[in-house]
Image (cartoon, rainbow, N blue to C red; front, side, top):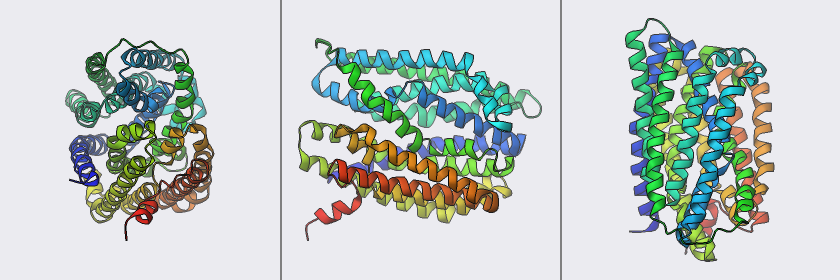
Length: 434
């Protein structure tokens, strides 16, 4: 079986699990929209977006490089070094999380009308963010230790199931929209879930020998890679959470709910591409560490091919069936069908131009990605203010598509110039035998 075939089969399996878990997500969002109304759904989506963004910041970037260092220390048998890395990562989650919960709410005063709604829900939002941050560190560590299912399944399956359960319990015992008690119940359940997953991380780390001598210089190395990567992950993996907050004062609550649901479906679709690169990351790291350029380019080429074909197939699926999925939330939500397809087309562009940020970091240039990301964010903000007031949902979708395309091409060019590596799918076709 070829590398591409193995990669595709594993990616499809993980994506199937994600789809199964997403069923719970869609049910809870549709239930909130139908039972409590679109305005309550809009507030719920704002809470989840804010919690996700806060969670990315709490480990101070250490979760973004967890896979890299876990794979490296596992390969070298440096268990003590890995323990020191994780102690610092989880310690930062605890310290920053407590600070955010107790003193972060004044930021909501800078967010206009949407901030007023979020302010009332700040404490449960913070607890959800802390639990999510723990899950991020758990997942990236377990992926680096070649246990991707243990890393992803709690977030893919159990997290959405607990959210559905939290809504069902609160809706059954209360009357009318009761978002605050629902969020508190969900927050405590998620915290218990991911603390349980942390126990699994501890067991996995204990298998690695701890007779190595820690290197003091490693801490500087952690920060050097983590600092730019927290911005990279925020702008890429949580692009639409940022965008949802930016659009909060440009779209009314009904349209914001429609766009929010569309972006959640996009996030589900994009996981198929994320899974491809996650599964091949440890092998890419090992090839780079051994200076095996041929093996490295082969891994990148196979991953790009599978990711692009998968993204194209998912785009076509959303284009054909997206309208019927959105009908679950109510007839008004079908207005998001074409904008959602445009968002998914951006995923094809991103997959075609490859994991440029990752390759730049492997070539010891982690900060080289930041100008391209900044360019993408500037294009997004400008596009929103130029297009959304006149074109609503379509304007928001086109603005996001252009921004993702611009930064994907810019990152590819940066990697080509600085690292001398073509990470796009085109390189694989050029290298293919005639």
